[in-house]
Length: 388
Image (cartoon, rainbow, N blue to C red; front, side, top):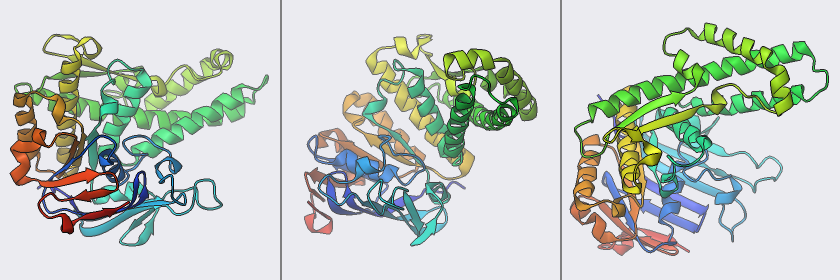
């Protein structure tokens, strides 16, 4: 049985443009409309902080604090989740850089937890935002981040492993800066790098393999099918070789590559350089060569298939956040998107400037009008209020 968590009440304090706002939600479709700059995306971003990582804008902790505030911020949500009713809260209790206040604080039912990874027991999140529109034509680093976000929704510890791998690689690079680096220290550093690298690669390979199968199952759907592959030797080998063998091979590669990496000032081999190769299958071309509209449809197909995969692998249908997605679709694909979201059974939060774009689901959705400093229901303004 697949569970479908939903937010029942969302509260923001000093988050981005919002001094304070409270949203009470009753339905699984939630629509935020209003002019550009009103704060719609800020509400979606606040929800995205209920997952591990830095939210849908990849912002630093201090960047999301309200400019006119004290440098602190908070997001709290009453959630009917996988473990029943719970209140999840996160934020910055003191300005970034203040003594003891630079770390993000997370609580479940007012009790401190180690990190937002603990929230994954209650709900999962996936999203599609305009910043992702250039994914296929941008640098490989952007696709790696997208890939790791896909993995993170299934494996909540993946983000901490990726961060630990980055730190371990930086440590090795610093050792190589010495004219005569200690080989014992390098051996120890490379042992750690290899363990983390293989764990990251295996999780990526598993997720991409499953996602490719999910996309293939949607071949006859309204959105184009994507072919997925990982451009990295370790991820390719992870499909049929044991992890210990991969670790040994990578350690040997690192050892042999020390002179080259020392000259380059960085490690030139490993999953930190992997790329996600996406093919637009209807035309058999790389996604970067598809039209802008085709790329947008391909992204939607990826997010929908990923949401289904998360539900299948975890038993928890993820919350879906869609920012300015609907307005760019023709009526046929818009209807298809609404149908696919309904079939998913998840709670979906959508934001857009034009209320008419959501007319087809208006009767089944919680509708909110967002203006600078205020968010309210069109039919009952007193039920929901935000204060500037």
